[in-house]
Amino acid sequence: MADLDAALLSRVQFAFTISAHIIFPAFTIGLASYLAVLNGVWLWRGDTVYRALFDYWKRIFALVFGMGVVSGIVMTYQFGTNWSVFSAKAGGILGPLLGYEVLSAFFLEAGFLGVMLFGRERVGPKLHFFATLMVAFGTLMSAFWILSANSWMQTPTGHAIDAQGRFIAVDWWKVVFNPSFPYRLVHMVLACYLTTAFVVGSVGAWHLLHGAGGREARVMFSMAMWMASIVAPIQILAGDAHGLNTLEHQPAKIAAMEGHFETQTRAPLILFGMPSVAEGRTKYAFEIPLLGSLILTHSLDGELKGLNAFPVEDRPDPVIPFFAFRVMVGLGMLMAGLGLWSLWRRWRGRLFDDRWLLRAAFVMGPSGFAALLSGWFVTETGRQPFLVYGVMRTAEGASPIAAASVAASLTAFVLVYLLVFGSGT
Image (cartoon, rainbow, N blue to C red; front, top):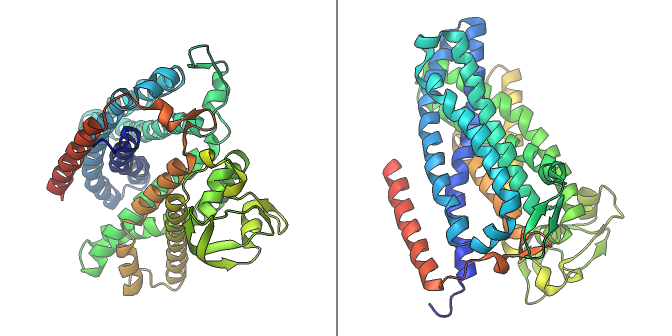
């Protein structure tokens, strides 16, 4: 244990717990909006199919919501146990932002959740629909505050640092609406909607492939494919805008994502390769000339800084961002392709009869979760070696605890999570 780094182990532990947590709130954000749409369409049309789908998915929402709460509480304790120095110095900024999330978003969700789940016959359909809207709005507010806090760590503004090294807010407007926040909020919310759409589409496709589910399966699959065909292309555009913002404020992260070590104009796009820090290059690179500059700067003559342009101590390790980014983009392209495929089959009147489309939609069910986690890995590992980008290093924020203690807690987390998740399957 003497050779292990407590800060690195703390990073691994937090990465493990947040990866297990983030899939639940992401799913609830999309599912809450889907439930609101189902409830609204049932009120509008009086079609019992939409009410049946609402009753089906609300049970899943309740389970996922509960898991999100429990896993989130476990994760937040680590701010005090593993990252106490960071909490002491950045608590003046992050504490209020996370507090606003609890006091506004979580209380709103929790306050109306019981009405949404059990209150239709007690409060009437219109007030029940209002409760469903409030739960959906609460999930979006939660995303707003959490992403504001995380975005401030990526692009910190609106603060000062006092004599004790603590971050003090001097302009809350700039703190909340920091430069990367709008792009990351849109990108994340769209990712949540796509994640939910592909889960719903996968369930509908499974029923259709097995000749079960009737009209409910058709409605599920049709709604999911509409979402995929509309939102996936929008997500690609949102990702492009987010990339331009990242290039402006975190160019080292872009260099790591793209696998560029040398600064170049008219830079190629590296599709595949193996970044090597030791050799200072991406080995076995398969490149498309000029496309890197065109995509990232919207100019064929655009300049892209390479990792070697930054001090060694300020560079992120490119391996995880490089590969995770390609997983995210690849899955996004597959989502958009499946959406276009569904539009073609819908136009031909064969949306529910194309078994290859149904099989593809079923297989793509977990794709949203995989893309979401990949994007999160890019965001967080690309920010390294900083906790607050350019201001506070990760090693400076770790608690002064022994590596053996962190290793023991990490092992306990892995075992308990395997038990809990294994039991859930």
